[in-house]
Structure formats: structure tokens, C-alpha cells
Image (cartoon, rainbow, N blue to C red; front, side, top):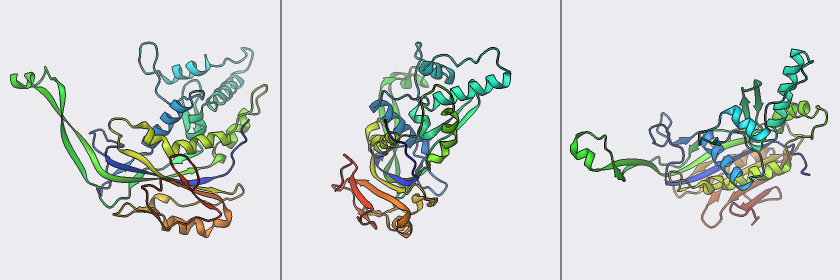
Amino acid sequence: MSESFNSRVFGSVILRSINSNFNADFTNHPRTLPDGVVYSTDKALKYSIKDYLRKNYPDEKYMFVRTYNENLNPRTLEESYEALFGEFPVADKKSKKKDKEEFLRKEILRNLYKCIDIRLFGATFATGANLSVHGVVQINHGVNKFVANDIYTEDILSPFRNPSGEGSDEKERATIGNQTNLHEGHYVFHFSLNPKNSAQDYEIINSLDDNEKLFLAASDITKLKESLNRSVTYLDTSRKVGTENEATLWVQLKEDSRLVLPSFTELISVAQDRTIDFSLASGVFNSIIEEVEIIELYYNPAYTKIAGINKSDKVKFLNILNGKEF
């Protein structure tokens, strides 16, 4: 049985995007801030992580991923719950209404925590009981820290004609569309992991009689770390191809530490020659190194250049492809 994980973690996921569109807006263009800088929502990275976990760890339970019913329609929240756990729990008919509601909430909460995506990212569950699970992992928006934000659009030809096109010529010709990409970008995401976010929920569900004890397991964190390193490269859809996991910074504090670190998004930069500079981030965690358990930097030394961070007893460099230290 896996041991529990109780340390807080701060870190960063860096994605390299070449001629790609990692997170399009509703016009199918890369998302941009008011100043023109390309960015990505946290949802795009979370989707990649959940997709990686679901495909590589099928024995785990997943609630907030799209699944389909027998008519090939996306399941509702209630249908997804029942597909995983059967019908909603029923309290003793002799119980008071307040007791029934409390029983229902605790039983549903216990089942929700059997899903790894909820254990990690939390959930809002408004069917059967109004529950809000505060996820232990929080991810900020990713911002392109490369010096350029060059976006281009190219025409593409469809193999099919559009019978509803205007004019007889339009109806006879194949359809012309377009796609828009970012020429080159390096998205920097900040993330934090705080097991205390779910500690109270675990106390509640583990107080129920005759139930298995649930907790945030070290094995959950091992799977999370693996997906932080590989999920975007693994996803490789037609629009996201060209976007890859470039580096991951993992700063794990000691269990008794109460420090809060600033966002690494503003402390990591990418130079014109694509060197990732960790100087400002290093300045932060070096100043509190006595409260740090371990710092791991994952990247591929064959093509990724880094600066501003050095190996030490507490700072390890690991290959992002296989997790081996070098």
C-alpha cells in the first residue's frame, strides 16, 4: 500500500511550441493577452494531464473526463457518477431528513475521492449533493516567455465541396479553410501542490464505519510528476503537434515548512537563443534552502539549454524523457 504524501510543492511546467497552436481561443487563434503576449489557460495543461493519466493508468477512476453513453452522446454528471459507482447511495428510510442529507454527502464525497483526477484537481459536484472539493494541485495560466509572439495564418484545402456555398462556382469547388499557429513559443506555467487542501475531507470520509481509508498517496504524486513531464508531448493532436514538454521544475518543501513561494512564471525567462534562465527562481529557493527537501529540474540535455541554476546536494538534474538523473 502506498504511503501518504504530506509535503507542499511549488514548481513550473515549461512547454516548447513550434508552428503549433496549443490552446486556441474560439476563433481558433492562439490566445493573447491585451499586450499581444500569447498565453494558455490552465485548463489546457490539466486536460493534457488527465488525458495522459487516463490512457496510461486505465485502472484508476476518472470523473471529470468526457465519456459517452450507448447513443454516443456525452454523459451527464449524474450518468458519469452512476457509470463509476452505480446508483446514488440511499440512507435508511427511518433516518431524519438532516441525517439522510449528511449520509448522502459523505458517501458521495467518499466515492469522489476514489477518482485520481478529483484527488489531484478537485471538483464541483452539484448532482445528488452540493459538494466542492478543493484540489491539492493548482495551476496558473501559462505565459509565453520567449521574446517573440509571431502568429501566422495559412490556407488549407478541404477535399470536399460546400453545397451551400454562394454562387454556382462556390458550390462546385472544394472548400478552402485556414489555420493559425504560433511560430515559436515557450509557455511557462506555475503550479503548487498543498495536501492540506483536502485534509479535512479525508478526516470526514475516513470517519465512516466499514470503509477503506483514503488519502493522498505518494503513488498519486509519482503519476502526477510523470504526467507533468510527458503529457503534452504524449497528447500530440493535429493542432497541438509541435508543442512538447520542455522542462519541469519541482521544489518540494519539508513537511513542517509553512513557507509560501511566489509564482515562478515571473521568475523564469527564455532568451533569444532559447536558453531557459532560472536565475530569479534560484534566488528565491536558495534563500530558504534550509526548508527545502529536494529540488528537481527535468529537461532533455540533448537540446534544452538552461542557465542560472546549479546542481547540488538538494538540486538534482533529471532527463525529462526517462526521469534518470544525470
